Image 1 (tube, one colour):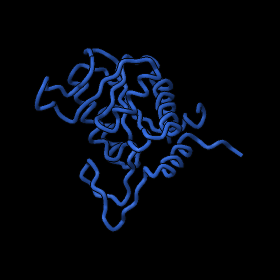
Image 2 (image 1 turned 45 degrees about the vertical axis):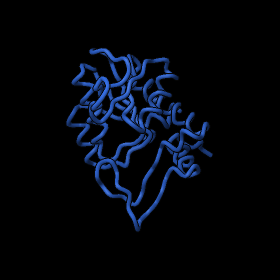
Image 3 (image 1 turned 90 degrees about the vertical axis):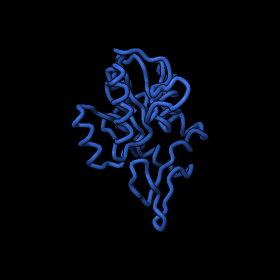
Image 4 (image 1 turned 180 degrees about the vertical axis):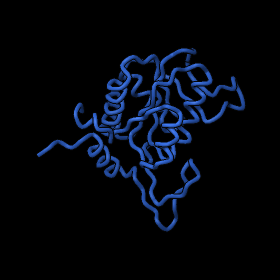
Length: 185
C-alpha cells in the first residue's frame, strides 16, 4: 500500500481537527467577497502540534525544493503569519509579515519586521482562493524593493482566476498538491 501524500495526510488532519466547515444553507463570506458553502480555518491547526508540524514541514519542503537561496520568509496577514513564522524558524531565516494596508497609527507600516530592499523573499499563505490578498501582499513587498521568488500555501481551491492572476504577474505558487511533494515528502 502506498504512503499517503502530504496533501492527503493534511486534508485528513484538517477534517479531524474540524478546520473544514460546511454551511450550504448560510454560506461563508471569504476575504475575496465570494460566498461559499465551505470554509477552511487553517488557524485551528495551530492548536494541534501534530498538524502544525506536518504543515510546517510541508511548507518548508516547498521552500527548499523551489527556492534554495532565500533571504527572508514573509507571511500574509493574518492566516499566513503563524505558518510563515514556523517555516522561517525551521529554515533559520528572518521573518516579516505583510498587512493588507499600512497601519493607520504608530509607524504606519504595511510590512512588519526587519526587511531590506533587494532581499529574496518567499511568501507564505495558508490557502489560495482567488489569490487577491496574496497578490496584494506580494505587490507591497515588490514596491518596497523585494525580489519575490514565489509563494507557498497549504492548498488552493484551484480557481482559474488565481492561476491567471499569478501567471500575469510572472509568479508561481506551490501547494501540498504540487507533484514534487509526492516524490520528496
